[in-house]
Length: 109
Image (cartoon, rainbow, N blue to C red; front, top):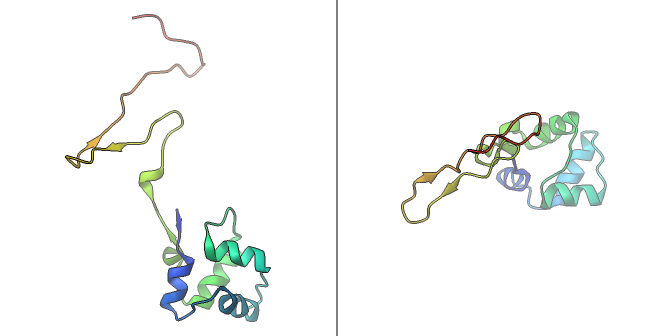
């Protein structure tokens, strides 16, 4: 997921983290300066659903405005990322290597 707080706030006319912090506090969500800086500048590691509700109310937005899915970043364990060739633009899937679930090696071929 991509965190899109800054752009969503800018679309509502809020250009500074401190402005948003004050508005959130008026709605009962008091956030420290350090945590607000992290929300504003980066990708939060964790965020309570109740906090997301307050942010959405203050910004007058939907959750989809704040969190943008990035399905291309999802991989199964042990799977390499799908590589896109720059010249042709075609997608090249990595080779599939069968593995046993119990961790033992496969017999020789």
